[in-house]
Amino acid sequence: MARATKKSRGLGRGLSALMSDVAADEAPDAAPKRPDLIVPIEQVQPNPDQPRRTFAEDALQELASSIAEKGIIQPLIVRQSPADSDIFEIVAGERRWRAAQIAKLHEIPVLLRDYDDTEVLEIAIIENIQRADLNPVDEAAGYKQLMDRFGHTQDKLSAALGKSRSHIANLLRLLNLPKEVQTYLVSGQLTAGHARALVGHDYAVSLAREVIQRGLSVRETEKLAKKGPAIKKRAVPGGPVPKDADTVQIENELSAALGMKVTIDHPAGSDGGKLVIAYKSLEQLDDLMRVLAGG
Image (cartoon, rainbow, N blue to C red; front, side, top):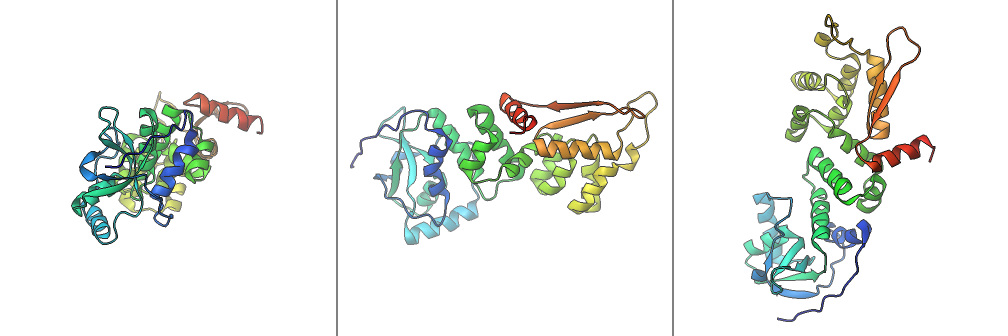
């Protein structure tokens, strides 16, 4: 088997550099890249840290039929296994590898890269985000992983992934929803539009149940969120006084604009109050400082 000499590309490549291969790898209409090697399929193995564990069987069969007819158009991205230099570990393209096995291919084309363990994990998360069937909660969790583990900002993710900053910010806000509401979103009982209207609401779970039960539209959900569930509007003796609909709406709008949870404490009959902005990372704090400074 012909072997290629690995060329060092240096450390600190950055997100855009890592995306240069993955973007072409994922784009169905991208011009095919010339492979570095043609390797026996039994010498290729999946990445053990790949976050994606399930592959739709019908989609794999469809891809296998295409591969049997036309071959693998885009080479898989691999690296030499740290444990065995004769084994190639998949960095991106595991679906094609699985489909190629179904199609009974004996050899597959690959692009050989020298990514380290951290970069392989980063690319695995990026590849996972690019899935067409990904639900909003999992997509948001992928963005959060890239920000928390690798220090990327929303601006960097937007530029490298081709997603608008508002799209990323709105999805990240969904992670502030109660787990029950996130479950409704994952299952498809609520859309991302419904869920965004409930972010930061004190009664998000009750509202979500009501939206599902009544089959409300996004616009109707937004109106309901302003009013709040009727059963919760009466103050409990000795308990906290429920916020009025206008205050809740302002909190939601500020939270949406900043991508952070905003809480307003405005005592009834008072001209003043307190506004609290909760940030989850130093990157978010930097973003907030730029906004407040007009940057």
